[in-house]
Length: 176
Picture 1 (tube, rainbow, N blue to C red):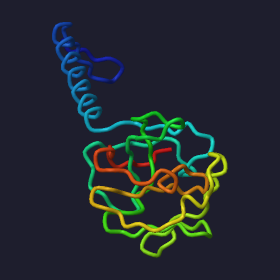
Picture 2: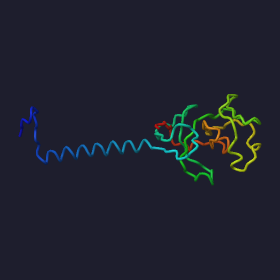
Picture 3: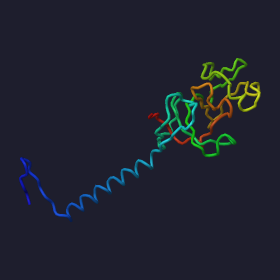
Picture 4: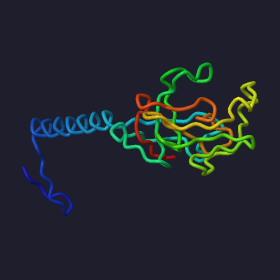
């Protein structure tokens, strides 16, 4: 049935036809949502002192594991107790890749291939550890990566070493 209502042409549909369209739309939304959830995760940084200042919410792409220095990635924490349980999602900047030379010097500078990527070991005191135990130079081996935050108070590879291939979840994109 077609009716004219205040200058507009309105077409009324039967309930079965409307129900079919609504069911198809709902199915399309569910499939799209399922596809989104199979590929992406949302990460939220609840800390007061952020390792990547200015960002709290991240979109994590589970299918993007192509690693590039300077990009942000999410990975599962491993052996970081008591601060973080194994499996906790963490987000940091990839600073070093296999073959890179990482050094933490007595001035508390962290360098990768001679380029400063971090300054400070402020968390060592909070963790009741002597800063000198972190000093040294190492070459990253195959399958091991060095991750850093931008804050001097970031709990990152300076304190716990490398992240291996199996821990990496995917690339993270800051949203808010």
